[in-house]
Length: 292
Image (tube, rainbow, N blue to C red; front, side):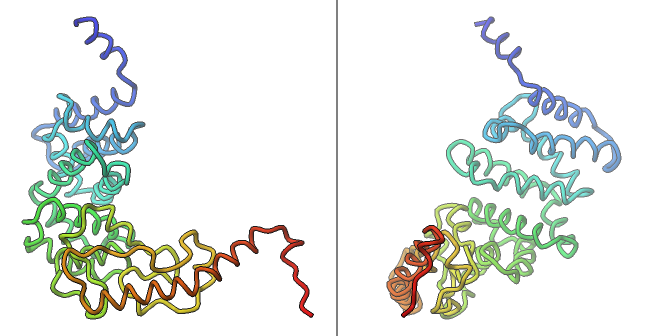
């Protein structure tokens, strides 16, 4: 048994050594004011996690390893929220990876989201600095907010969360729609296909709503052009309408119209798009047809 512990210690990777060293350094920085050395140590720790070679391993390690743990992560969140919000957002983007959304990795990831959400002052800092964030940073924050609200129902009624969501839902894209649906479910636009929060199993179901081309409108069938665009034809998801959001209750009129429109359009457009794909794939000489 003793030999096994020695083997595990000797097999520790350089990346793990750097991460543990960064955690210990941050933990030892007690009594220091935010900024300067403390900020540098907090940033180094979070970047050591982001740059770790095995994302699935590190997401569990930062919570389970005795050298790291929740207190270190909370301290890193608190310091960077005060002085380096872009690094904090970069860490949230790391947590949002699809491969961290299943199995034990998902449990660890959700714990990290919960620690961040409950770090004193973090959400308020995000709210007050929202106007300084870039569009891409706001998208990351929107998905962070969605992830928190999916795992913590009480978060949806937080005044600060609602204030952030009020601004984020004005953006374009699935992230904004997801925020609006989870936090303002009673305000879905009439005629748009409403997302039922009870029917959404996880964050990835929401991410799947991201438009695939310039004629793909997952939440509003009325915006889809009947004639496919060039961008739609060239996309691997060629026809708008294959993915339909499940509903936990009986379908309303808007949902029925949405489904029927998409199915009828697919019946008409799909054969044309398939033929065009075949023509593109064929040798150039075969694409020339005489018109007589």
